[in-house]
Structure formats: C-alpha cells, structure tokens
Image 1 (cartoon, rainbow, N blue to C red):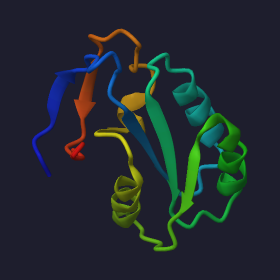
Image 2 (image 1 turned 180 degrees about the horizontal axis):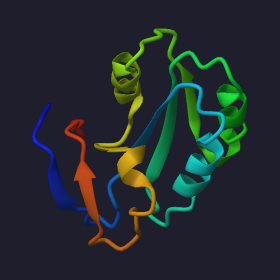
Image 3 (image 1 turned 60 degrees about the vertical axis):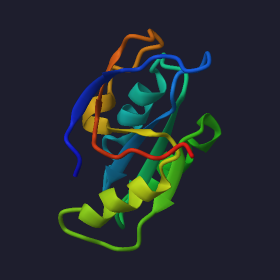
Image 4 (image 1 turned 90 degrees about the horizontal axis):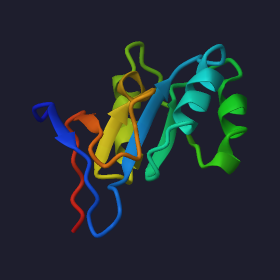
Length: 128
C-alpha cells in the first residue's frame, strides 16, 4: 500500500475532487443507519458513498437500500471472510473518485472549505 499522506483538497477548474467514502460492513444493521446519516450530513459537495456488504445475515441490506434515493450505493460481496479483506478490496474496485476515505476517517471531517484536510488511504485512480 502506498504511504498514507495528508493533503489539502483544493478546487481544480472550479470543482473540488470527488471523494469516495468506503463503508465495508458485515451484520451492521444496528449501526449502519447512524453511520450513513452522519456521512450524508457532510457539507463537502463532491462525494459518493459505497457500502460493500460482506454476506450480512441481518437487515443491513434492507437498511442500506433504503438510502438509494440519497445516492448511497449498495453492493453485496458474496465472498465471506472473517477479517473482511476481500470486502475492502472489493469496495476499492467500485470507487469512482480519485480519493478514497474509510468510514473510520470520514465522519465529521469532510467540509466544503477548500482547505479541509483529508487522509488518503493510499489508493489513487488515474484521471486519464
């Protein structure tokens, strides 16, 4: 994995770069609604939220799918793993933004202020 870096998100051609917020989950029905509500309340204008479900057998899917109209993307990862490594790798393949944030880092820090700080998780997508 690339070295973790701290950067300033600055507008490029008048637009802030897209940030993909990754939410890997397994049996998260008890907390996923609070997590998604918090993430959707960010005032940073250019982000997507992707939830990758690692074979949950609770109501996680139903709850997350209820956020589809708000732009939350739900993906079922059929490869159950105890530690969820494949779930994290799966969610990274779905990301559209050049910057990736993990939910552990995302809550409460994204701001429309162009000088906000973001810790990059080490995945960069080429804009070419």
